[in-house]
Length: 284
Image 1 (cartoon, one colour):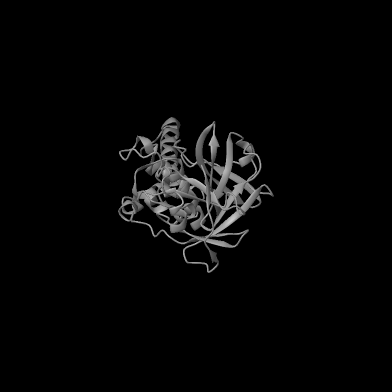
Image 2 (image 1 turned 45 degrees about the horizontal axis):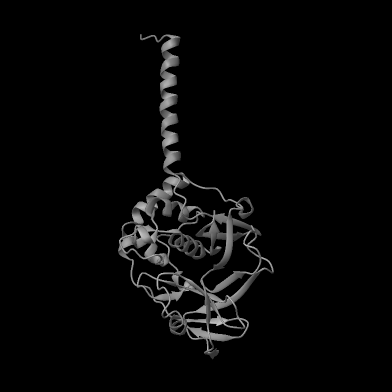
């Protein structure tokens, strides 16, 4: 009859316990939010890149104060003779700073709202999924350092996952549009960070305002970060798929709502039937 010493029994039990721990830990890691996202990303790409296609631009902007309707081609006409590779804040005498247009990959000016085309590479209920996906799949690069050499060319949210490189507004547009697709109130914000022009994302959720730095490439998942914790970000204007807001107060604010944030215009793909025309003013 085989007799095992107490020491052997304890060693065997310890080995079995450690093996069981490794199995449970491996299963836990496999089903962690990050691992689930990694599998979704691997399944979605490169198909998401293949689906990149020319966007459907156009539409009209309704200026909320004067009820004046500005078709895209009218706004484009006002930038003739100006630098074609930069964005412009535009309006009329009665509607100052009412909307913005920016050059796309087709090198034509379009309403900034139109770059949010309603695209998500895959479905997820993880609010950190879009930011994590961008950190894994897109490289940050200034437009002027790309092969095009243009100072500024904007990518739609779909194009942002087709092109492997892009700068701050390309990341912010992709992130905000995906969050909107998830049912969140997210907006692209433009302003300055440390004295340089920059774009980021603000998320309004459960009565709080959270700031997403869309170009963050640090490994791992993120936590929601209150906008009040980021005073270096100085917002001037923001937009979602439908509206454009302009900060009429100081850019040194950590608040993204209130009377200083004025909703200036509403974008629509279809003509709105309001009064057309009017002299458009523009600013940098």
